[in-house]
Length: 415
Ligand SMILES: [Zn+2]
Image 1 (tube, rainbow, N blue to C red):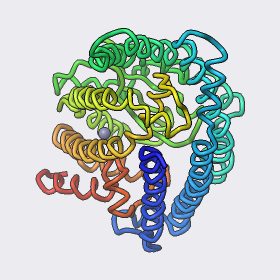
Image 2: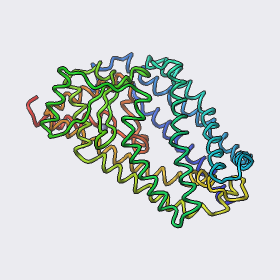
Image 3: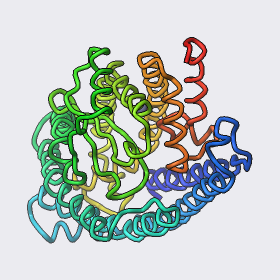
């Protein structure tokens, strides 16, 4: 048996096993007792509901993984990739066209298999807990818009990479350079071109909230280029806030659901946290790290892309580049998992720093604490995730840890 095949199959089973263990530990870590910080915020019924929500989602994830694992393995072993490659080669003589057909078929298969899961998650689980606001029309339009973006952005990028690898020396370096420029460009235009396809952005109207935010930004010498309200309520009652774009397109988006449920003081706290990310250089840092890790990925890719054994593992006896790019993804999974964990460690550190920034600059850590509590209850967040789950997957520290850190700022001021 092919060494690459053994390695890849072992990886698939191993990562499924890890996730099974982590999820089981996570559910076992639930306790029926409401943590002291949340007594009076959660009532017994609502707290029990948050735990049922976690259990439902966990079970759903395990069913999904339990179906996807054998399906993926069967697809590899039964020559699914060979079959798609034959279709691609029958479609055209030209390698780049073959690559687009190959990638296109894979994406379609992925969409079709993913569809029932996505429907169940949105219209059964989220619906059951009163979160879902997505209509069937929005649901279908979201899929179509996603596919449109794949065709308009994904296909030309994939074609460009294939062209570079088939015609330039040191292709990995050129491909990385080209992709980095494109990525930065997409990041730049996303807030004005891509995100508005999915949500309506309206500048936050003048009033108490807007002037308080502006006053805070002025005090921090932070140039606000845009504060927008977005219609998150179109899909879910869950609330959020985020930072997007850079330079001239830099903007802060507040979900309408967030504005509706929070006081001005709490919202200024949330905004201060987001501005903290920017002021502390977190956004620049993550862009640099992501470019560096993709440089490493392209280098490792260049070592394997010509290895016939990798293609043979998937039942293909030639070495079509487009297929090699996909197969390499299977091989790279462990490195990408390690990078993901490292990225989460850094992200959690940044979250603490942004919280500290908000607490110090607003001098109102209590407002942040109360915003975090409301967000947790409204989104039925898990208050007691297992430490291993946090270590592997959490981009934000568990809410109780964030509150504990914020409490440290309370003792130093009079509020
Ligand atoms: Zn944050």
